[in-house]
Amino acid sequence: MLENLDIPGWMNGDERRELYGLVMSASGPILEIGHFLGRSTACICAGIRDSGRTTVFHSYDLGFRTDEEFRAFYDDMHKRETPVPELHRQMFQSSRVSTDIARENLERRGLAGFVELISGNFIDLDRGQYAFVFCDAVHEPNEIRHNLPHIMDRSMRPATWAFHDMDAGNTALVAELSGAQPVKQVGSLGIFRY
Image (cartoon, rainbow, N blue to C red; front, side, top):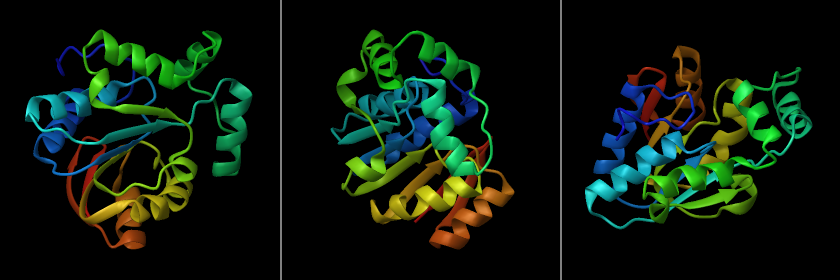
C-alpha cells in the first residue's frame, strides 16, 4: 500500500516507510499537523491498523479555501510574498478544503476510521497530549519558531516527533529551541526524541 500510494503530496517512499514504521512502534495518542490531501495520514492510519492497537489520532490542516487566504497566512508567517503551490491552486479551484479531499482519499482506502480529521489550526483547537507527533508545518525557521512551542505543550514526555522538511539548519533549530534529541534523518524526515 505504501509503495503505490497515489495520494498527491511531497513525502517520498523512504519517508513514508519510516513514518509507517514509527507509528507501528508508537504507544499512545498521535497528533498530525498538516495532513493536506492525506498522503502522510494514510501512512499513519495504515500503521495504526497494522499494529492491531487502538489509539487516538487527531489530524489538522488549516483549511484554506482561496489563494488569498493561503497568501495572507504565509506572507505574514514568512514576512515575504509566498507563492501558492500548484496542488493548492488545483484544490482551491475545486471549491473544497484539504480535509474534505483527505477524507475522501482515506475512505477509498478503508482508512478513515483510524483518524479524526479536523479543518483548522491545531494551536487554536487542540489541547490534547500526544506520545507521537508528525508535523509538516515546520518547513523553515519562522514556522519552527511559531509552531514548536505549541507542539511542545501538546507532547507527553517522552514523545517521538517526526518533522518533514528538515535540513541541518532546521534540525539544529528544533533541537536548540526544544531540547529534543535528533535521532535519525530519512530523506527530509527528521526524527526527534523529546
